[in-house]
Length: 350
Length: 285
Image 1 (tube, rainbow over the protein chains, first blue to last red):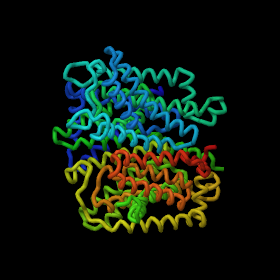
Image 2: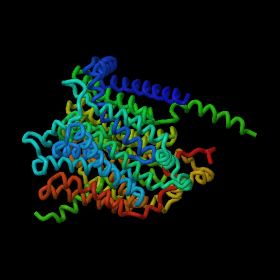
Image 3: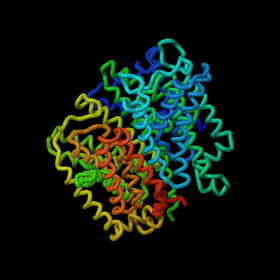
Image 4: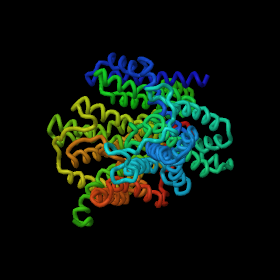
């Protein structure tokens, strides 16, 4: 029942957003019909495109989970982008430095990436819990720090400048590669890992005491404290997990897709995670379709551009509109509420 | 050339302007109870509209009006969502940021065929904005702490029920101050455009968030927030000069890192309005 209502709400928001998007396209001198047709074709037109959509959705699943886990604890992790960059670099570093057997090497490199991201989540978490530092601002600021720090590491003056022609590291060893499903396609096992993590975090949040504590802190920190929950610990845990998830996503993206760390490699997957977490209404299992939706907008946007019907960035505008309609809880209940309030008013008349 | 010079302090004064304007706007909206993290995107929208209007009309004055208008409009949107539709304030602000980021890339491509940049267009002297910012901060300090309207503003954020009982329309006040916040962010964006002479999608570059940090350090008072903004402006100015001495990435990092350090070292978070971020329900509690 609740599921049906949530689903209906999301679908209504999406329909409304796509309607407004059509209006924007029309006003910009584009043809809405052609735009949506090419968007669909670019995202789901054939097997190759479906794979491209899923490739884009993979890092977004990680970053959406990252945003979500902090959000459930009442915190905002706006810095997934930077945590992802640190995870990506250190994942790559483990991939070209350590000598380990196949598979084990991949696992270790992923964990190193997760650890680097976790550190970048722990710092704002600790600052929030112990010093009251606004985590929204601090995760955002630390995100810039991580992005430019990794950029320096692979710059010509940095220690890991791996190739002459671009600011990137050397290639990771074959033993560290995250295998791909089909030759010639970028889609890799990171997708499966992300899907499993969605399930795992559903279990963690709704079936374990730690997850319960985390949600309790998110709903009412003072009540949680009276109930004997260590609020500081829950906050630090939430942001550390958030960082670890984003870092893991970055490492998976490098080990599976790029096979080396490249500066500024992310087209904004960290930001997409905020959108994904919100569209999923902070439910871990709903992250999977939400991330696929955003991945489809990305892949479809490129298709639109290739077909010449609209710049790929129209997809970002569409995504922004979708979020607006998804985040207003009252929007679809407002008419009912107005009716109810009027009734209350009538009844309270003497 | 020495790093510390009069020139440095002058450019600090200039670079502090957008941060101070955002901090001032955020002070108003948060005092009334509305958190607006959409300031970053709102400033970007201000810069974008300023570029568009300046490019097509050639009038820098009209362009600034456009920036003010789009800022006020985005403030209106955020207030509608946060106050009337009861969306989470931070989430709604994030939505503003994401939407504007998309629009900036999209509209520059539609208008000029360049992704995220505009051609050069008519500008006015950026020092005008510096003067306006100082004036506004001074006036606001008086308005908030020395006038009955300022008292009402603080009551709305501190104790909305009391304000309601005293005949103040709580939601309308929140709407108005959030619109004001948006207009000030639009002005910050207008400064950024007039300072550079063209629009780029990275031109706000976190200064909106740094503005929020300046507000936090200023502890909801305009003058201390201005001082904090000046400090961040100084760091920004220093950053640009340091690029000749250290790798550019490190100097770019500097303002962001210092913002975290300053926020972490700052403990006097005493004046947070009690009803901040909470919707006001007449019948509730």
